[in-house]
Image 1 (cartoon, rainbow, N blue to C red):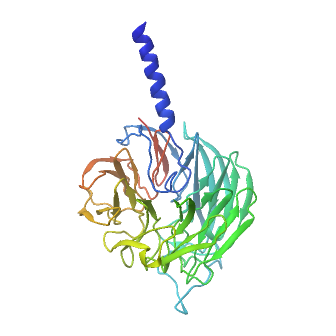
Image 2 (spheres, rainbow, N blue to C red):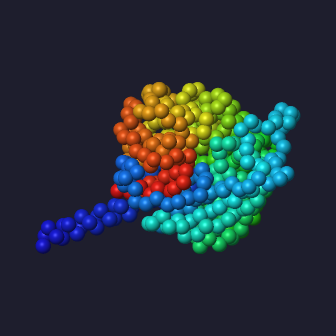
Image 3 (spheres, rainbow, N blue to C red):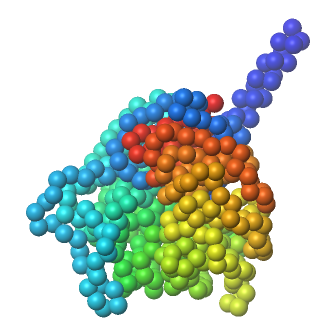
Length: 434
């Protein structure tokens, strides 16, 4: 009987450990908005025939899945027929009429959806049309009108479609409210995702040349606008982050002209410093007492900023000017910052000092990336458009320890929740588990 009792105790301890380490993935880049999972029981190996628990058909979209317990939420954008006379709002750059050469799809009907799936089976629980019709502005030909990732607090899910609106659904799929305010996206679409703070849904809503750029907070329960703060920056596609420093929370934004921090409850500006002076697409990184803003086009910029009450001349801790990509957000994991180009070349920096650990680390195969990396269990998962995930060993030496695949193009970022990895492919959502 003694061995049996010991075995039962071991099972109980294992179950308790699994429960404690399991976590939801409620927003863009996960629970801390940094692409990092603390879970210990996540599979590090998969293929089209190994560790795929299920795959479910999905309509198109580039937003990443979010997960709360047994529910998965995604958004989608389905392109329809040409609508005669439909066209994008006009744009100017430096006072001149301007049309981006890669702007497309403003002349068509679009159906924008929010879906909920069962995490155990992949079955669609509900499918709601948030918006249907022509769109206010165009998008980049490689983008999607379902680009922003939704956010949930476990009671409601908030889905954002840029100029076509912010929509709040309860877990049964009932629309609670919507807030629609058209704004210009330079004909390239929307990239920023909503975040939650206490009773607020917050959107970084920068546009064109910045004349109407703002950061806006809505009441989670009603959709009522609680505060709005004008921003002296041109268009961005970055998602802000919440940073706790000196017993207060700061809402830090990445922008072309300026990086700015706000009081998230009121929108009051707390501090500002020089921005990335390039397209602000990447989500800021947080760690080692710093907030690190980055950009990759037209110039490559990395700026490590000290948040909190700091003298202006001491605000910037260090800078670096190599290694970043155009679309892909970077990652700070442990002691190091990992910068990724759009072809998967990795640069590793000491997060505290900016000291270079290595440059030019390459994937084992030619690849291109739109999804941002995630990290777990000492590994950094870099998923390419070709559907291959290169598992980079964390640390100051570049080593790809394994290549996994789902044999389908991937344009979004991975989600990790409750012992599983969820990958949104071009046509399917894959659930990966041991």
